[in-house]
Image (cartoon, rainbow, N blue to C red; front, side, top):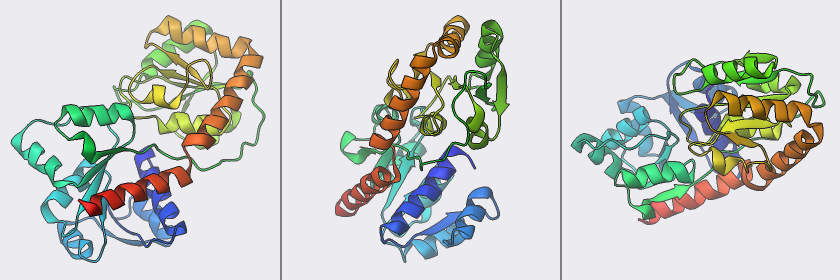
Amino acid sequence: MRGGQRQVLLLMQALRKAGHECALLARRQRPLWQAATAAGFETHAASLANLWRHSMEADILHVHDARAHTLAAIASRRRFVASRRVAFAVGGSPLSQWKYARARRYLAVSHFVAEQLTRGGIPDEWIDVIYDAIEPTEVSDEWSPSHPAVVLASRDPQKGRDLAVQAAAKAQVELLLSDALAEDFRRASMFVYITRSEGLGSAALLAMSMGVPVIASRTGGLPEVIEDGVSGLLVENETSEIAAAMQRILHDSQQARLLIENAKARVAARFTPDHLVAATLASYRRALAR
């Protein structure tokens, strides 16, 4: 599952733990559907007919992507809120403006994303900033500079895999292109998250929680996750600067370990399931009061 889908499942689990019943509408037999079913959640196909039928039984509907937002704007029989994770602006067409006016509240994943919503005409008072959450994850190996640097294997052109690969070659650092971050972070000297567009950076949060120093682009919502030089290193999307940051972590073990400890503390203070569910329930209450 991608980061946004993991957050949906994590939120549902946190809501259930807090005493709230949840049902999921999702694409059949896709990873989120399978994970929610395995976790014991009521699950139905994400169709207009099902949305019409099941929204009537709910107190509130929460949509998590653009397709779900469109379906809810057309067919929901209850008030709905919409999560917004992407870093690009809201469309300006009449149809887009109608769709975005239908939601009662927006749950922006960062202040950066909230600003994009405001620029698209969404009133500030409709927006809540609610950060992603990370569950505590055990790490099997102690951090070591001898482990490879991990880079997301995505070929999305908005991600900076090309820059990370070039920087690793320049810094003479062993690089692992990963499709399984949670597994590969168990033996990683660092996570190099270079991107041209980012709403928040849940992959960076995962690395921080698992004791892996993070080098990340100074863009989008990432500066809200990482305090530069304290809980990670922020860089411009420039090969030499990325390479210098990689060498800095490898050649200064004391600072690397300090980054690790500060990052774990930052995640525990701001990015937990308890923070997520409390902020989300507060947003639901505001939506129901409108």
